[in-house]
Image (cartoon, rainbow over all chains, first blue to last red; front, side, top):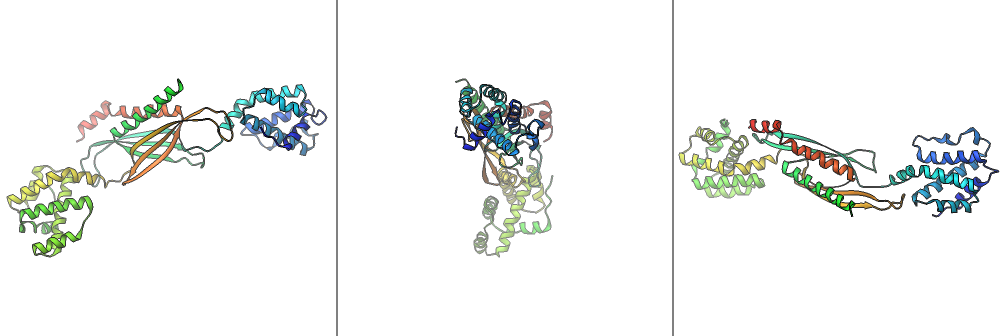
Length: 195
Length: 199
């Protein structure tokens, strides 16, 4: 994990009981996790009365340093010993290291889910709906009498917030072909998970 | 059901008894070819010269024949109805037989061509799939995220279109289950009754 000097400086300030007493430290730490993981978190996350006595510039710096470190640790799936080593280097005392690791452990799953959901991917199928119809005639052709299916795939796109749909028609034989191929895929998936 | 032939149509067809039955058969062949590929006016000129008539006459004759065949095929009229409809034209027995044979021989193909004229949605052509496992991304290392990548081939108005999509294992199972239900519907009593009774 490569961390900048700014992050290190921020942590060194956090380690100092003169700048951050125990209570302030815990609050700042929780605020850092909250602003990353809570979708409804707003800028007022640092507006706690017990943090008012600290210089706002220092507060922001340390908050940013903590958030940056948390993201990097989550990205690389850092374990407790990696965390401890880095925090020791920043002159954290035992108690603060334990606190940090506990908070990290509590929030690890949410953090990993959040990080895993970031990124580009192909349009993702979320659902399917179908309609069975019996075609009787068109203006060009009477007395048809043919069943047909209309299938609509609901698709989610990471790039655009729109939800395009893909619709297509098919005969019974074609739908059987489609379902057959999807079943092959799911059987193959099942076999792969048993390896 | 009888075909209603307009006066103009009858006029155009009036050319047919004036030529050999082999010529009528040739016109029939040209008519179907035009349905398949589109009209080719040069053929009219060649035929007009050989038969010593204006190319307009030939064109009307072929078009009249085409319309007769397409309307009959569209409505899927029975042999008897076809014969009765053509009877009003006052043609010879031989010509009537020839026209009927032309109708019966080409009906299926003409109906296939006509069905392509209907408003259509993209239709399914083929599906290819691939199993993928995402191992890492820029924002998260050491992942195991299975996914199924799908290439869906669709046809619309002769154009071939492909869409590349992805889905996760749970959704894949859901898709299979839903579509199997769709196929099962055709076998229900309700659908069977409809198919049996609407003919």
